Amino acid sequence: MFELRTERLRLRPIKNSDVPNLMKIFSDPIAMEHYPSTKTEQQAEEWIEWTHNNYNAYNVGLWAVESLETGEFIGQCGIAPQKINGEVLMEIGYLFVREHWRKGYATEAAQACLNYGFEKCKYPKLISLIAPENRPSATVAKRIGMRKETQIHKWDRSIDVYAINSD
Image 1 (cartoon, rainbow, N blue to C red):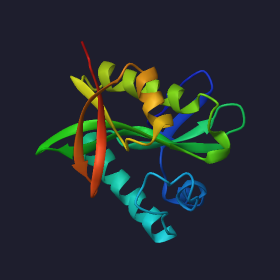
Image 2 (tube, rainbow, N blue to C red):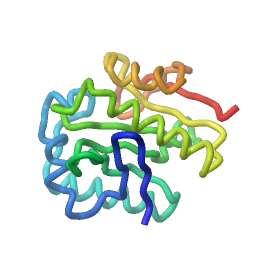
Image 3 (cartoon, rainbow, N blue to C red):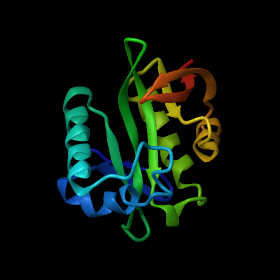
């Protein structure tokens, strides 16, 4: 079974039984501020199905992030396909339970995903799609070496594209 480990974290495939874990994020209007809205349990189940489809089609997807120390679910982070201007690019995405913000977990998990994407998957480029006003997410992208490349219109809004090339 797939697993990534960092100094403090374990990233593992999201399971159908993770709906209550995901709802800690999806039902929080502050955590979901940069998404169109919070999500219902049914939408969380659909999110898991989308994630499992990515595992099957691309061998990557968003993964559950757990504390190595406690085993507690603290968020999700991974690599997912995104269509931009007709091209499928691989995005590092991250979303954490609010009580675990500002502890460096997002940066630690995103760095592990970046390393995996370049070293194991051999992707030539990785991106992160970030709402322009989402400064904490932009900070994570910058910490792992990404730079703002452009701005696009996606999901009925302006989105900044942060990117890093494997070379």
